[in-house]
Length: 240
Ligand code: ADP
Ligand code: UDP
Image 1 (spheres, rainbow, N blue to C red):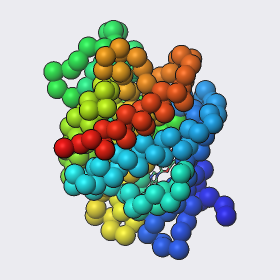
Image 2 (image 1 turned 90 degrees about the vertical axis):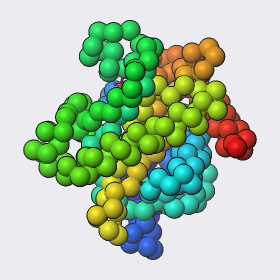
Image 3 (image 1 turned 90 degrees about the horizontal axis):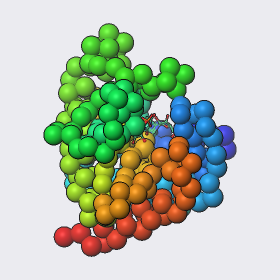
Image 4 (image 1 turned 120 degrees about the vertical axis):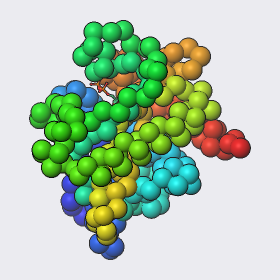
């Protein structure tokens, strides 16, 4: 069966249900808007497991998401959405492009989380935009933007606490949202939440446990992802 879409890290397939898709996690890894490429054994399984665990938890906490059910180690059934061409980035601690743009060191904590938007377009290098750009480019309505900000901060609160229980500091992460194919008036959280799109640092040692290990050639990429899965599983099993 041919995918309806093949991206850098996942493939999407149609299902018997016109409102659902099968999303398959690949072993491929990319960074710097697709310019750096590699493949890691077991990456698809690890990211699918981490993402499913987080989505299951978010659903339980009342966050509307695309998650329907896990299908296999690397495949998940999701509600089909029309993805907003906006990447929503939430930052708790200075790192990455924030530090590059502002000429500051990484690792200092913000007084409040920062929510920022960029255009989801690798060829343009995912440029940072503001709400006026979103309005003029018609990427989302004002109501939708208000919803994105509120939902992003809610997810941040839940994830900070969750990762803390897993002995991890949630530095920053990227979210994607989409309009449900079944009812475009409803926006849900979509795509994945995994160490590919989150910066996670060991709470005690500060060690990087996410895709920065690949971006910066630090080694032990999959060992870190496996450790994140182990700790996240433990945090879920031992929650109050
Ligand atoms: P990219 O497109 O950046 O290379 P991926 O390899 O992760 O990224 O491809 C997955 C694609 O599927 C992304 O473009 C993402 O926006 C899209 N997507 C994620 N969840 C859904 C969904 N529920 N319905 C439709 N598209 C989705
Ligand atoms: N991120 C992502 N996809 C992108 C851009 C960013 O998943 O296309 C994630 C990234 O993993 C990090 C956060 O969003 O956790 C903030 O990324 P940043 O803007 O600092 O970009 P980078 O330093 O990776 O270029």
